[in-house]
Length: 368
Image (tube, rainbow, N blue to C red; front, side):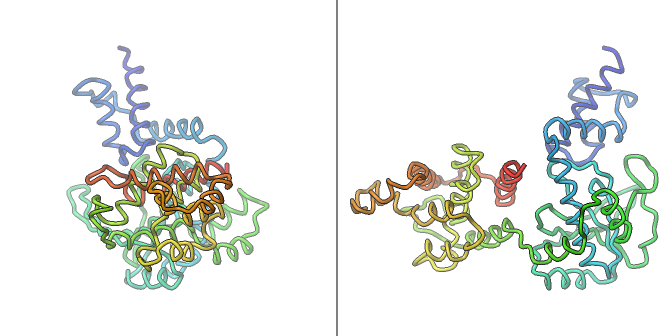
């Protein structure tokens, strides 16, 4: 086979692996793709450059995400602007695809911070009521081992803050793609970029809006996490804790109605009240979710226990008729089926973050 053709095939396969998030590093993606295409050992000369793979990924983005990628890029840059404004004391620098414009589904907002106190950054995030995790990651490069601190902030688009020593703010970082100094922007440079790229944007108004904006998906996550500690009756729930049950119900709902965001939310959130007041989990859950879910989702959660009464014949005729008259009655019955089906010990389910991201993507698609 022609060498150029093999190289193109490896480029395509490596890009596919990275676009679908099966691989996150260029080297691993190109080696896996090379071995797959060549069915074994691959000549180094056939391996594409990181830049070639990046360009191929952008073709995937154009094909599968269309014009929506431009809206996502704008929103990711605004997320970066908010975060950098909040963390201006730590000399933030925006890097990566959000700055260059090479974003794709699942891309992070990558920001470098420079500080002598990780606790100070965490305190600032805490004061703003943001949800985040701190990760210590050991990396070996050029024969040297280093420990990096990453702070993952759970926003509409995931934000990764990489922390460096305070005196490294002017250190020249090099790109793994080109080997040249990495592109990065401070807050003033990001403001200039936003003004240039989006001339109709009012940054003052955007900042005011974003300061009062709560990411509803993070509220869902916050309410769902405690369910892992909620044990249930083995007679009715042999599968285990309430979070595992909720993820099973969601998974079944996603198989049945993958594009109905309101139904998927009802499936995932129907038991959140069990971690607050297990004696009246339906009313408590609805109250906790007030303002963060639609009337349709609320109705489904409010009446999901009625589906069990319908099945065992304990629901009164008048109550049954009222439910039957509702336009989403058939959907309520489907929710009940998913609720009863989600009680299998050892069932394979997505984890909580994956479930939330699936619904978030459905919401983005509907908005687009």
